[in-house]
Length: 444
Ligand SMILES: Nc1ncnc2c1ncn2[C@@H]1O[C@H](COP(=O)(O)OP(=O)(O)OP(=O)(O)O)[C@@H](O)[C@H]1O
Ligand SMILES: [Mg+2]
Image (cartoon, rainbow, N blue to C red):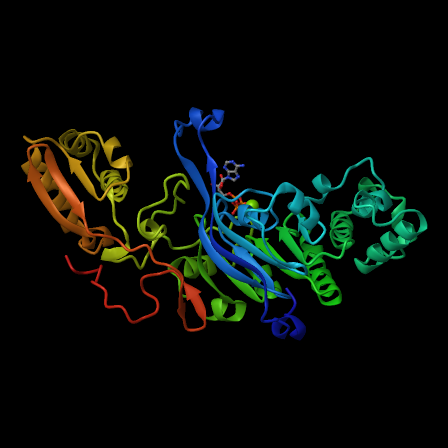
């Protein structure tokens, strides 16, 4: 990627275009055939789970995070393309503030001109049987803004703005006549032809050849400067976010875990998840963006996010207060058994009994039976002795033998909110660095 032009680093206006407050977008799982197939027949997916941020007029804000973290859903909620479950999406329009979250469909239709979205696949965005002039001019036509020579003139102007020049050469072409990069330029021309305020660009370069990606981002920066646009840029690709964004928001399981100036986040990441993502930067395939060095690499199910801090089961910096619970104990036991021989696994598994009851998130987990309680207790002590530094143990309040088995009771956890820390906002118990924490490691 080329170095970031001076203009974008400094041209951040301070007034806000959007104020998003405690936004939640939950998708209902009930009734879905896929959900039933996978036995997830109850509850909701918390695609966006309590997100608050300000989008400043004229900035490029990046939304970065692994697949399923809620980036697209958040982008769609800004445009009113998905109905929030709760919270506010206050858009400071020319005619005064509007809450997109509660606007009527009629009001939203009126805002369509101002709020545009560009997706990753230009092939899906362009009708193959429509020539470029018709496609790019379509928004002007449906809004009854221009027709005839005026329409043609404005389409030509938009095409030249996006580098499809001379425009006459492209107007009569069809999408199949254009390269991927040219198609995305046409899509951008159509997105800006109505003079929008905001463009949400959802992975706009990820399907394009490597050789044209930087050129499309440079074009977008040019359009932004010329037309006074504000961008939300959704990406897996940290290198492009670093080049393109004034600020970035790191998302994990429906939440923003860190947000701040791009330079600050890249120079000094604070959230353990941000650190892991940045450690993954030199991936040959940026689409994959697999964070490095994370214990228990699986991203949890957004329908049943971990208690406390959503990131705690994977967090290399987790401590006693991070939200340890029953499901963490299941993972710990299963990991323990992968290290045991089959006979030992058989014996210990019988002793502990079914782990399925640990799948219901709870601060107390009961294992074994009344008669096996003492032995299960010993087994847990042994497992703990093998790796006393495992942070889960620091989160255990007490282990008690009872008539129904052994109860493992976990300490109350903290679900950290975004807080100011050295120029960024971060949702982690370790920030700002003033709280005294119980040590997680080496405390036996
Ligand atoms: N229409 C829908 N119905 C049900 N669940 C959905 C729907 N759309 C998204 N989800 C779920 O919501 C969560 C967030 O999805 P979203 O597409 O916003 O993530 P993303 O960060 O954009 O992911 P990706 O990087 O793969 O595009 C995921 O768990 C996803 O499965
Ligand atoms: Mg997406």
